[in-house]
Length: 155
Image (tube, rainbow, N blue to C red):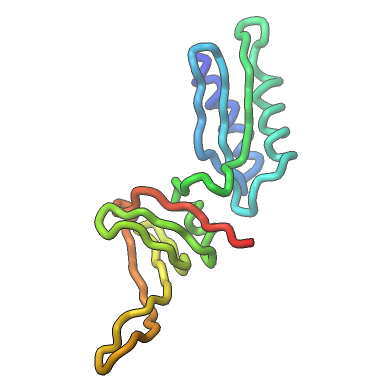
């Protein structure tokens, strides 16, 4: 078993014990530097990162490999990658870059295995007369049309 396979197996075991956590990214370079990015249905605590780190660190042979390990949570500005992340962020505003219509900033109102639904208000010219009116817009986007999506944090 290769070093990366060992790390992957230990990580899988650690996440089985914590079903609310899920893996976003795992990188293992040639210098045995392990970089793990996690997310969770209810967020990721510092203790979650420490626990996962300890499971992997305690079960790898430090005599055989001179490794370093870093476990972190996906940052707020990190792009959403998994369907599970979209589902957890329903009700939040997203900035979505699409393959066809450019960029949309809107409220994520639904997410399923096929795509997402975004809703927003826009000012458009009135159909009759002069001036503009506020209209409700909605779009269903399949994941294949999303280049990148990030959560907009409002303070």
